[in-house]
Amino acid sequence: MVSRSITRLINPSTLRQVSLSSSSCATPSSSLPPLRYHIFRAPLPYPVGLKLQNDIIDVRLKAKRDDPVGSRGKGDVVLMLEHTPTYTTGRRDNSPNPNELHPEEKKVQNVGANFYITKRGGQVTYHGPGQLVGYPILDLNVMETPTRCYVEYLQAMLAEYARDDLGIQGVLAPHPEGHVGVFSSPTEKFASIGIHLSHRITSHGFAMNITNQPIKWFDLVMACGLADVKATSIHQLLARDDKQDPDLPTVRQVAERLIPKFGELFSREIVPLQQEQGGGGEVQQIYELVVGAEEEAKRVNSQQGGWPEQPDLSRQD
Image (cartoon, rainbow, N blue to C red):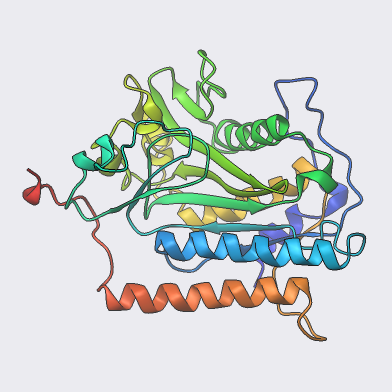
């Protein structure tokens, strides 16, 4: 079910342009098919989300081989979700020794979160409840979008939401020293970006702290390799700006507000990912993978008895 507010905002005739800092990254004009989205109901264990992304990319690559013209942009999808408590690091982090634990992993042994080395860009970060994770799976070739510009689009979208929609003061994107992400000051960060490309199809994406719940987990590591930068959240920033409202935005509400901005960015209609009639086409296969991931997440979370609300520091060495 699409909320009435989203339906109103995604009308292509009302789309406005997200402002970009680089004139060479003008917002693209696109005649591609609608961009589909799905907002997950419950947190996903990280391996479930990772497998889902890889499986969707496999479906998309096969569709491109079988029907290069008909599949153009058809399988583009944005997944919005939370993860259960997880630390990850990216492919550019050259510190791991295969015979030893990652240095940051040593800090978070037995606190209640898993640790994974992934193929995305960037260094160590945290994912968990209270944080919105966005996984756009988009074909940059058919969108005629350079990788650098795609990262800037995501960065500008998150910054504009915080600054213009929520009224948060002092939003910096990028950091004054050029670090990718969205910062509330040179020493505070509330959103990270790390992507991966497979045959020019994107995966991974962005993570934005909405509630204060992720902060204690972030405090245990040096996030993104920035020793002088600490994590903050939308809720903390609203309270600091004297905008604390009894109806502070939930993770899902922020997801619903961000979804239309993908239409603004890429000049595309936004529609929910739904079951399609007529067999196992590309979109139907992606829909079935998403449904399967939700069912697997429910099974795993039930089997594990849920997830911790905060790090357990009692078992640390």
